[in-house]
Image (cartoon, rainbow, N blue to C red; front, top):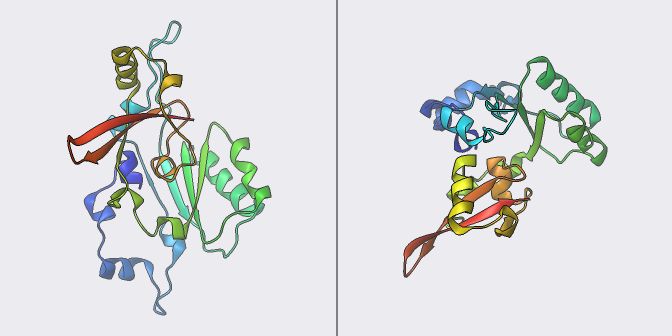
Length: 206
């Protein structure tokens, strides 16, 4: 998922064999040591481009709205306020831009209130079961590609549209969550077509 978003990860990290996974992350009883699964990664140059706003008067050199991501796997059967506060503190201390917390169960509603309180640091929560299958590889899921601000501008100028006139995709859409899409971005969706071979459509993230 992080590689698909555009973070720097090696082929060995993404395509680890089952035997290597067992050797590195499982104990003698066959239990996964979730504390060892955590990692962090930096955005690629292409990702930085897609997250850099267009220059504006007074800000001719905008900074990318993305940075190092840290992923942590919780070994606790439940997730409460204490767990997410501890994760938020880690993100702050290490100056991570984004954090993904992978849990065995959904956090409590009280714990989720921590997420907006640490903005602009981004915290995302995923249940383990939601990541067992890579939904982007499913035959019924079309390819989603995030447009850079420049590509978005050209698209709107080409069709003489305002972004609000584009079809929409919600931030809680499974593919939007998978790619970490943010409000206001535009994603290109390529679908197969029996007549045209394939065709592209665009969605504005809300």
